[in-house]
Image (tube, rainbow, N blue to C red):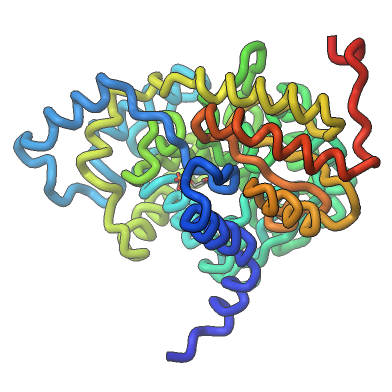
Length: 403
Ligand SMILES: Cc1ncc(COP(=O)(O)O)c(C=O)c1O
């Protein structure tokens, strides 16, 4: 069967993650599970909180829990999500601002479908979650990349304004970030929103700010994650419980339209319609009902904290350069040498799997996902040391500098 040109090209562009996946499977078969250190997938391994599991058990047999409901989701669930957002942001969200979605991925597809005409542009800040490109393309849009600063902060106003055109419909931000773990400070967010207001003024129509926040509750000590909706009126917040409640396979998320958006009702109707007509129909009923009372809850992130500590200490000691992640479970170091693919292949020879930065629009880096058992991190350390020893450009810091 001839495959569409779009999909053929897309398969080619996303081949890195697929290749790592296939390599991982091959290495496991050859050497056994314990001898492969797979940091390639962002698959959250922490179990859902006990109380949430108990709630799911209770719901399985409850009357009506498996039926169709309004396409936006159960009204009482949406009201609870809205109340949670109002508490967090001070903005009066109601159930009429919230659509329950099939994860954040489903929410992004619904939103792009609702707002994009063919050829409309969506700006993403590089490095970025690679699926954005495919989601925008699904809706006939065009992805436009703007580079973040050298420490992965939001780009300065000039860089944003340079890429804004009359076709710019939206900008996507994501923090804690995949693949860098970066969290924007309140001041960084404010000045980025000022730049976006200036850009909107220039093209004479408000540019939508889409804040993709599935890692918001995975934050490291001392890091604060500013709220986006109070900083910019035309904001749609998208999130999911894949990471914060450990429900990645259960596909449950939310899309929240700020009531400060001029035509919020129209956008709600459009998103509800797209949730239906993209074939989702609605988010999974049981999981909507299950998460309603767990909006403030989170998995216990001790494991991510420990993995981060071990990796940061070891890789820094070996001379790797990276920003210490403020949240999520990723590290995005610079690769020694120009071509990160060569370096990723060297790591592969040590049975360490990571993803090349070009998979995220940022060559010269590689992504480590440390959502893995701590044992995997610890057992991989000798391999990191051996590979680093072959790279004189890495300059291990002296003991004093790490103290
Ligand atoms: C930045 C970002 N956005 C969205 C998603 C999609 O998550 P889900 O559809 O599981 O909610 C992911 C998943 O890894 C992600 O990293």
